[in-house]
Image (cartoon, rainbow, N blue to C red; front, side, top):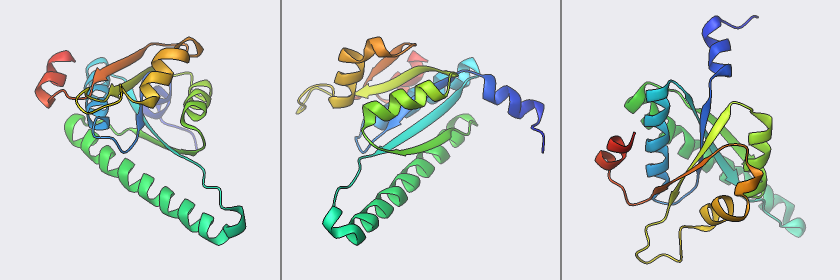
Length: 166
C-alpha cells in the first residue's frame, strides 16, 4: 500500500523531541514543543525510556515488572498525546525504548534525521538538586554529541508564560 502525499510530507518535516519522564516539569516541555511545532508546522516525538530491570534469578518477576513498566509508559504517552492533540490538533509520534536514557535518545536521533530539536524542562530550583540528571547530561557533557539545538525550558512556567514564548 503506497503512502499518501500527506503521510510522505509528515515523514519529511522537522520534529521536536520531548523526553517524557515522571517529573512535573515534563508537562512544560510537552506544551512548549507542541506550541512551537504547531506554529512552525512541525511534528512532535515523545520518547519514554524505561530503565532495564535486572532480576536474573527471578526471571518471572523481571518480566512482570517490565510488562508493567511498558503499560505505564503507554498510558502516560497516550494521556499526553491526547492533551497535545486537544491543544494543537497535532498527533505526536510515541516511542517507548528500554535502556539508558542518554543512549536511547542518541540512538533515536541517529535513526530519525527529521528530529531537529530536543526540548527539555529543568526542575524548578526550589527544593531541587539542580535542573535534573537528564538536563545536566544532555545540555552539559553530551551537548556536543547532538546535531541540533537543545532547548531547556524552566519547569515552573505557567501555560500562559509558555504560550507567550512560542
